[in-house]
Length: 164
Length: 100
Image (spheres, rainbow over the protein chains, first blue to last red):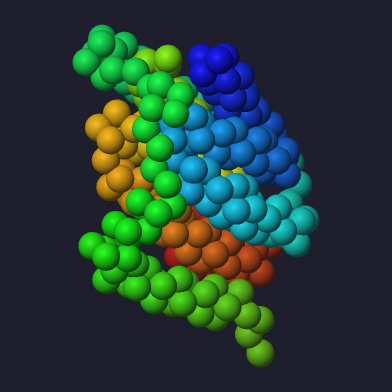
């Protein structure tokens, strides 16, 4: 059951990511990225991170991707054009990414017995556990991030404002 | 039962695709989206290791990465809008000068 769910949603993730890479139009890439993020939320649930699964749907596939699609539609972005720069990037980019993937996959599969296995429902972090650590041990970093968000909002408004 | 290595391989695949898209794509918004994809791949690694060692701190890390990614997306998209307003292009090859 766990393996079937993993392969369904992991496959959806990889398909969405490949679609992001292959599509020429930014709006198609943005919509496939939403597929990736929502399937990742299901994988988080399989790994027992229920709060993070909800946060992934709300923050990533909700807020951030709405912002992306909004900006794409606001700027009326068209399909990208190929240039000389992209030709050099093709020569360097694909072999580099393939080499990275090969090294990482080799290392992970070599140590697969030491890494153990995940059982469905074997380890569940409830919101209660997470909030206890967050609000007792890490209260200062949590409050600092709220300042960071405030500064980011002010910066975004100042940058995107029309100058008179 | 799914080996934890499968989750790590999946996140390696997502990270590599994000890296390739970052290098190959010429549209600045798509480049920004591939950064988000790489962040998500790393988040999956954190959650997988948090599951393996039964530690909450891995998930705390993911929480903070999400917060920072939201702030980064807001500021980055504002910069893209300001860039589009001055240059009227989204192609990174045409944005190669510090000033107009």
